[in-house]
Length: 168
Image (tube, rainbow, N blue to C red; front, side):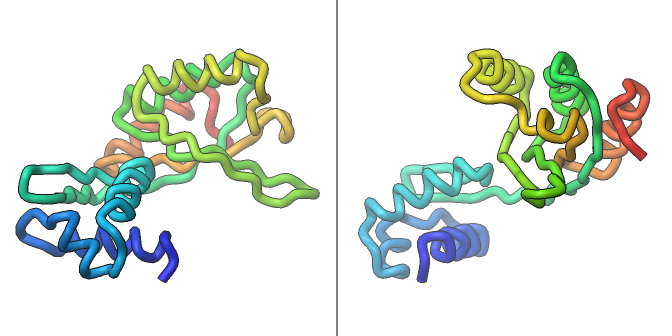
């Protein structure tokens, strides 16, 4: 079993349990060390799954989030405005991706769910280490956005359209 497969199974195991699941129990079940489980939990959390540690073990609260993909266009001066619009309406910008005629689909994880994270992303771009992905497609790009409900996604879509970001 690969590490990725094990992490998916860990999430299923924890969410399927009515009580906290200890790291030792997970280690025994998956035939790995407890330290491997601790590292897996850290990676699971980094992917956005809410896993909580208690004195009795791990618990996982899976929220049924809905997902939408928005095709947008803007210049680089409006990146923060776009991300703020998404998070201010209750969404999370999971990624950004473009369809390039030569390279195909290029995707980068964002996981932006607050103005603070949007600002940190902008600071990284401004540092000059790299350029925004949408630069290679003249500002045209897509975002996968998750939210707690379809109503939230609808509100994000409406405001993206109102502000001139949305294509189509």
